Length: 410
Ligand code: NIG
Ligand code: FE
Image (cartoon, rainbow, N blue to C red; front, side, top):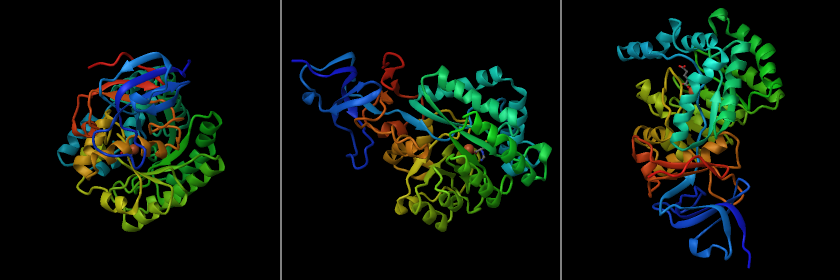
């Protein structure tokens, strides 16, 4: 009798399915099969259909198998570094003071404009490789260090190219409204006019953005300016997301919620009405504890209120040179627990199922028949181990659409 013919069969794994309502604690052992890049079968080893064959079979020996991790907020394509600003901040200067002196985002803009496409790719690739070594199979990458047409396009092309060169899904966000560049000093509205007339249309025409993002803060863009950008994104049928309530309460999360944004990100200064607005919307809260740590913030996002209101919480690295030079999503998960009070189970959901939602990707983030077989196998047996450690990564191997990166290591 012939059984199903699979491409991959992983036996005797502890399956952390991340399906809502699944039991917590050490997951039951079981098998998972893949065909044509999708999860084809999940169940106890003893229930495997008779006669099943697989081109590749792997004995997980009781190790933890999770959905591949999803980093839903990064600025990993950039040139240069900002170590001197870190020194200044350690000595007491604030992020805003440094930005107002022409440092901050503008410093990285200068370096990114100066790098040609090959140099930008060379500088960015190791950061993405570090994320992959830690179990990431899908990553979001923003522009926003160009702030002119050609450099924004260059950043997004490099992001797309990385997704061709490495086994990972790259989703891009256009963040032209990240800061006002020096040549538009004091003329934020004129800069936004330029973005709407010349940059966003070029980005959209080239198919280089999957979403549109902005930074809503007094040192960047006002809610009224973000509103204009979001209306332009809607005309292009591009989903939106927003850096909101990171340093002050601008009502950004409520604005994002009103536009049914994919996500509102940071949220340290989120008000109770902002929590309520998110709860009444499909918008996900994205927590970025790396930036909170690196900026030595004292006010964490209102996690208990978000949890009580049922707002889904994602966790991401925010990998960027100024506020979160972090290229490990499991470290971000640890920080979300230690600094923000997420449970390890919430942190893992935040880096898988909820992160998938923050990117508008319902085809991944859980172990479920029919979803993409993006998987991470860990030298661990309890899901909380992923959040408990502060490096090195316990990843054994990743599978992208069912294809293993390399033989699993112990
Ligand atoms: O997500 N908040 C704005 N954007 C980045 C920081 C960018 C930078 O300082 O280069 C963030 O923290
Ligand atoms: Fe960011």
